[in-house]
Image 1: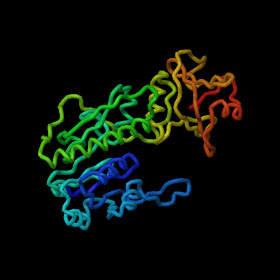
Image 2: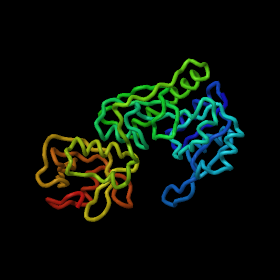
Image 3: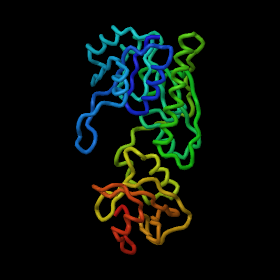
Image 4: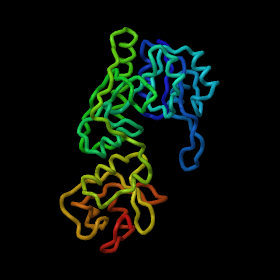
Length: 309
């Protein structure tokens, strides 16, 4: 099949590479425009664009797919299918019918659970034990199209969103290729999504990533892991932002209200709504990440001082 691939972040790269190795022909790639990144905020191409250009593919970077010019170019490419992985732009209805096999989306949950932009993060936040990936046909609704294929993946107790997404991206690439193979061979019938079990996973904002120490230790642990590596869990100390890397929940309480610090030899613990957590790595504003005990030696918290003040 002739494929027009649509994707943007690092999680889409395994799928693009798998399609380039497959029997199908990737004729062009759609990706988001270059975006500011790093401390200097210089424009940087998306990970998908970098791989596509290495492969010598035509790269399309429209700000919207509603533009008549980009619509004409997509039609001219005459794709048989348009595989989509975390592209980031809505496909308007007139373009949904261009490829005869449709726009085949790889989504990192088992639909209809966790429809939306951040399924991996929300699965960790909710304490799910199993998640997965789904290939389905795009339609105008939010992740509502008929299902083509699924796989499942166990969520490990210490998984961050980055860990889990990395495994799903690799496994999902195989699922996407297998789905396209089966569509071409006529041995796949799209199945409507179940009406039960629908849940939503909106984008995690920076404010969502602010650690709520009033939650139980297990919930703080989930929040931090769900926000790692992006947007990055954070709190405040003495009015300055402090980035928090994954923590270890503990049953033993720390005396004082939520957020209270307890510094002992080699460990820094924080009171939560129930139990406590042991800090691992933290990153003060403007500095490099460091072990929590090293941070505490420099900051010298006073007895009773709190995070999130």
